[in-house]
Amino acid sequence: MDFLVLFLFYLALVLIGVVMICICSKTHYLKGLVRGGAQIISYIIPECLQRAVLKLLHYLFHTRNHTFILLHLILQGMVYSEYTWEIFDYCQELEFSLHYLLLPYLLLIVNLVFFILSCVSNPGTITKANELLFLQVYEFDEVMFSKNTKCSTCNLRKPARSKHCSVCNRCVHRFDHHCVWVNNCIGAWNARYFLLYLLTLTASAATVAVVSSVFLVQLVVASNLYLETYVDALGHFQYLFLTFPRIVFMLGFVIMLSFLLGGYLCFTLYLAATNQTTNEWYRGDWAWCQHCPHVARPPSAEPQVHRNIHSHGLWSNLREIFLPATAHDERKKN
Image (cartoon, rainbow, N blue to C red; front, side):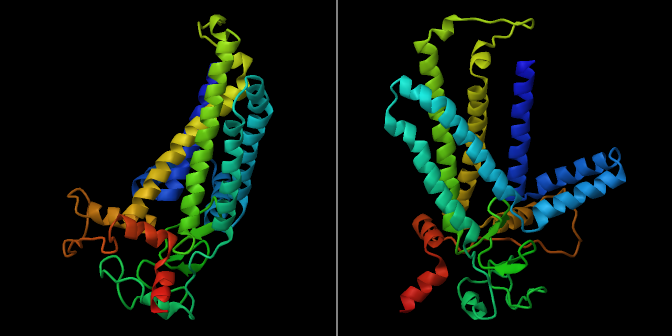
């Protein structure tokens, strides 16, 4: 029974991870899978319950709210509370180095700084005052971004690489995506904060996982726990889980979280290194899919080949993340 609970717990983590990746990447493959699942569920769930769920989903993912910010802080607080309560005391008894014990707290402080900056900073909102400035920053490729295109909502000319965010109801310069975890758009002016937030969050989760793993290994060796056995009716070895259930749960959570965050961090670093945004990657991926013979399209439609014209080498691309093109251009003019 304990292993069944543990399996269901990890399965829930995997599902949460898939939802997080779906929210962040917004690939049409996952969206199609979600639509298919929703159609199947619609035949089972009553219509009144469906409407309530749709309203809840619309509030969570299509309006600006602080739900995921609170969830983020609660999860982080629970992990660090458990780490402090269980592991920190034991590690001191096992004569761990204080530097290793305090490293997760240092990463937590740095992570919270970049988390707050990602939440409150201006992503690069396009207004009537700065519209002309943004129009001169990036070149139009006439495939993904065309000249003289106006935003039907803001009634502003759309600079290359910009997009109107339906959640925030504003056009954003070099729009990447709207992140529900920081309740803000990620654009040219706060992409560096989001990248560092994601980097420190991954590092803090991995550090807690490593320290917890080393703690369990040393505790098992010091107490000769590896010589103890416990076999239930199903023949499962459960002694370690029964002795330290909360630590094992926490360790499994942070290990799974480290892999999920690490995968998304690698994807974000790839986009930064190639000077792409999530929006451009998604649209470019869809444009590539249009060439697939299995994809139906009008006979008269000519396939348009998208080419990334904004990549100028690794270091230039990374510099553009930490020194946005508008600020760099203004500095060169001065």
